[in-house]
Length: 435
Ligand SMILES: *[C@@H]1O[C@H](CO)[C@@H](O)[C@H](O)[C@H]1NC(C)=O
Ligand SMILES: *[C@@H]1O[C@H](CO)[C@@H](O)[C@H](O)[C@H]1NC(C)=O
Ligand SMILES: *[C@@H]1O[C@H](CO)[C@@H](O)[C@H](O)[C@H]1NC(C)=O
Ligand SMILES: *[C@@H]1O[C@H](CO)[C@@H](O)[C@H](O)[C@H]1NC(C)=O
Ligand SMILES: *[C@@H]1O[C@H](CO)[C@@H](O)[C@H](O)[C@H]1NC(C)=O
Ligand SMILES: *[C@@H]1O[C@H](CO)[C@@H](O)[C@H](O)[C@H]1NC(C)=O
Ligand SMILES: *[C@@H]1O[C@H](CO)[C@@H](O)[C@H](O)[C@H]1NC(C)=O
Ligand SMILES: *[C@@H]1O[C@H](CO)[C@@H](O)[C@H](O)[C@H]1NC(C)=O
Ligand SMILES: *[C@@H]1O[C@H](CO)[C@@H](O)[C@H](O)[C@H]1NC(C)=O
Ligand SMILES: *[C@@H]1O[C@H](CO)[C@@H](O)[C@H](O)[C@H]1NC(C)=O
Image (cartoon, rainbow, N blue to C red; front, top):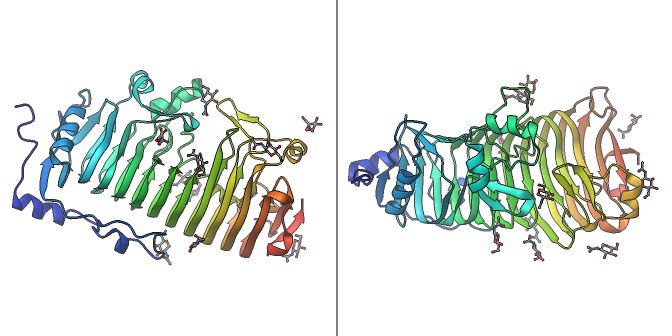
């Protein structure tokens, strides 16, 4: 009885649903542009029934049971609607890896509770970088759109993290084991940590994601990466606006065939390969990455590749590593605009190690090859003036075919100097002045 009116299935509702799909295009390949995905994205058949999710309408009451119930009822061929002007509260870690051929149309607002004790005990734990997620969304052929909001209630986490850097802050959107999906348009707000973890997934398109959420106290919202991809292939991230305080997009171990295009990033650490080589004994592969048409404002970097040295070191209390092996290859950054960005390009194999002598003594076990960075224009910040970029390998043996061309970038004082170390400078059409 409790869930009696979750399932409402009428023709008129379906018509209404189609009308409010907004920018959603069921043919995922047609939605991708100007570059095509590395591999065609699978077809998503139309849905045939609609379930509306009930809400207690009271932020102190958990709506998770209503949500699970609607998802189960409309799984395999239906659409679940989170109604406009409704508030939903999630206070339970949800395993949503059973989804198949389903749409989630999010028109209202979904807020995660601020119960930091509950979430630290019950969020999903992923051993990689101690990542945890509020929910794991996975399965096959799942579309999530509607332009509604997911709110991570991050403030309480920003304040707690300032007291204790070892707390486990949940990632707002966990895409874990999803094969075939479109996500967006959606608004994501106040994530406690990264906005998205995309792990063990393939053939997923993110399109029209709007990210922001600043701390209102003196404790900054830290590590709020837009996306981190991990053990995933054929992912597209496009047409999105990201206002955050860490990587705009980050390609973590075993990210392959990833297309990122048409992003506006502000306040970030750039679009980063890595960090890689953090764990001894692990083999990290990042290959076939195309990053195209990005505007980067108020950031520490634009194009960035960060690799730990061949020996272990500590970047900070909760970030330490080095000694892992692997390969970074076929990485392209093309058409970038920068404004107030500290480095236009930063390639390092000494991530996490301040002592360059030590770094050169233990060269990275992770190779970097076939990197093409072209068509960057704009101005850097004064952070490293007169330097506008740095390309540093730990040994000439572990870096090859790194190209830079048409880098039309100036510091506030009008210089365009690069630091280049252990790289073939004849392939770099930049002003290598030191290193
Ligand atoms: C991905 O799959 C592997 C192998 O099945 C599993 O060990 C891991 O926990 C999964 N999740 C993540 C986030 O890697
Ligand atoms: C997880 O955090 C602990 C500190 O709580 C740290 O010692 C450990 O290295 C971290 N593990 C990973 C995989 O980053
Ligand atoms: C580049 O991306 C911006 C959005 O950030 C978009 O307005 C513009 O049309 C894109 N340009 C091309 C050539 O796709
Ligand atoms: C862009 O980032 C800067 C620096 O982090 C921040 O002060 C500013 O508010 C951001 N702009 C927007 C539109 O969020
Ligand atoms: C990444 O891929 C390599 C090569 O296939 C494999 O050896 C390694 O175990 C993978 N790492 C993870 C974290 O899945
Ligand atoms: C390398 O990446 C480009 C996109 O930048 C892609 O077209 C090409 O197929 C990739 N090469 C291989 C060998 O996969
Ligand atoms: C960059 O930061 C400045 C200062 O905080 C802000 O005025 C400007 O709007 C930011 N740029 C963007 C694109 O948000
Ligand atoms: C840097 O590393 C070198 C080589 O291991 C060592 O001799 C030197 O003392 C280190 N410098 C500092 C400041 O730790
Ligand atoms: C790293 O490379 C060195 C040689 O440069 C090798 O002796 C060592 O075994 C490698 N370590 C790992 C973990 O692969
Ligand atoms: C390189 O930088 C130096 C010092 O700022 C400057 O004199 C020179 O013109 C620059 N060269 C090029 C090719 O931009």
